[in-house]
Length: 185
Image 1 (cartoon, rainbow, N blue to C red):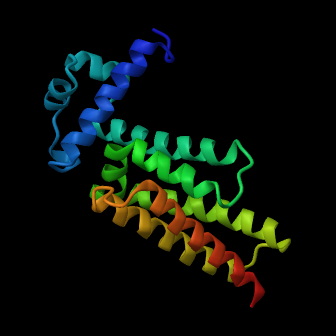
Image 2 (image 1 turned 90 degrees about the horizontal axis):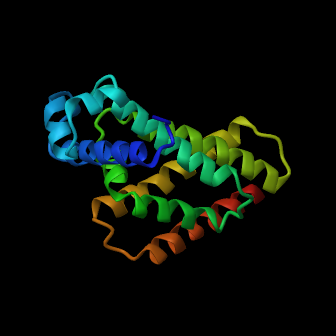
């Protein structure tokens, strides 16, 4: 079967969602292939067609999420006011995965990878916006900025998306706007 076959995509999505649901209840190392297969309503052999084990599945899910966000943000020329909406929409549309990677993942590997990725993008855009070279000073400020940005999103996820998406987007735009004024000190 081709990797882009619709049935393959549907099967992989079912397996990934099953893992996300199970990980909200228990640790990754406690999840068996059989219970994952049962939850996804597939045969164990089908699982092994796509993944080596649950760790491989988790790793691929993590990388896939980062790649998707990277593609969304870097393939278009967005203004700083558009990026928060894109990120909020992605988090909301992928709520199970967002909970898994940003609130339940005790190893925090996704959080660290996402922070690093967002810091690189933010630093690049900030330097372009200010027409300056990247510096150690900006690296520190961008790190602080991205951590705050992620803290808002994580709190929103932990509160089960209690605030409307539009409010979170406005909040993040305010954070972005304020951050851009730092260049004047």
